[in-house]
Image 1 (cartoon, one colour):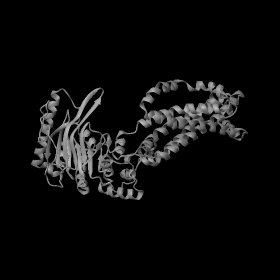
Image 2 (cartoon, rainbow over the protein chains, first blue to last red):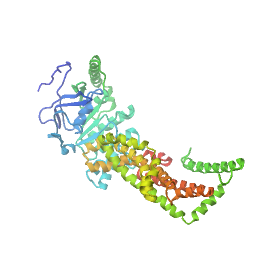
Image 3 (tube, rainbow over the protein chains, first blue to last red):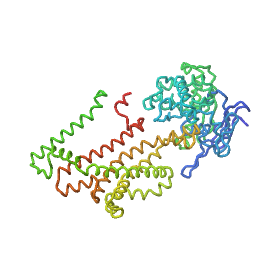
Image 4 (cartoon, rainbow over the protein chains, first blue to last red):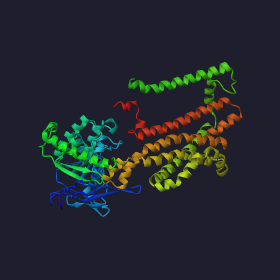
Length: 292
Length: 264
């Protein structure tokens, strides 16, 4: 497999993110996704190769419409790829049209909206995945309490979602995703709706939580600085059709404080990613297209 | 405003409105010299109520009207939830039946009442059917809306957690739809009372609606007003029952938040 194949039609780099055999915990091979809407076909993702190591923190960066959410939904088993294979710890996620539920058990999902159930308290929301797995009440409460503490919500166990702020709701969503100790945490712009200060704080917290739970994290975002700050590797996606534009390694030591963002190495990476994103935007602009 | 004050406010305004009504009532009688056959004095109406409650057939009339209302409403509730769930889930079926639903919505259903009396007799069956018909549509439409309104993000949560069909229903679809069912019931119970009363005065020989007709025929304005008063109370208590049910079933929902909860 060649490291870089130029896209035939547009001349934009199309990078393979595949890892050497056996290194990847999550592996995507030749994944494509085609959507049909009103008789028009859209190629949301084309020929994605990407490997993610155990306990690695990978951010998927790109503009809206670049297919990053679709890619995450494919990893989560919520969307079936039109072509290609997804394997999690060596197990294929899809067998034909059938989703492998064992592979799914390793995944915890956090969405852009907290998606908490308004009829449940914080404690019950966190314990929902355990409830669905038929854990008994004391076990659920114990775990909910433990996780509330981990995400900094101790004392709010009996509150209803509407009594919480946006940041607190997102903390509950993270705790819920962690409730059954998933090995992999998939996050789709989880802090996108939060204000800048809360967002910085949540990113620091997330780093700590990822460390504490030893989870592999795949994190979708359209904020460049956030992507670089959190990641071991930043995967930049490019739109129409969605493909991997570049992969940037970030080797700043952990735990990272917000001061890291002021360092030259960090700034250079952010600038380079911004350049690539701008280039992409101009290319799409020339085609007369704006993001969908 | 203090939470205590905002809790008391509706009570104060209710008493105020009642007092105002009685004052205007008495003023109208005094100023325009209204005949007691047209508008009796408030205190006469009150004694009329006392007499009505003591009269022989009063409680059996209440029982008849209550039975018609509750049985009819119960039928509407069961059918509305069942059909609403079906139509809410099966899009093509809903599309196919939309013209029929719209058509039956615009038919002034009260105009059908004489027809039902011809078909189902002067007994309580015809009234039960009228009540059911009137309260069915608001329940049906709300249930369809409710089944449709299950949040797609919430569905994603359940799908990613690999929840089964029953679990999805029990933990997500049922609690999501409940506020809509209750909203339908809130409208439906009011229609149910209207159906029972109108049904009774168009054809029948028992019930509170029938009482209205007899007191009108005998030119007993006091009794007429007394029956109206009792019916108001009757409708109010049934409505209150639905509201209390709502508080009990969906305390988490925005429509049931009152000042005491919202302050937390």
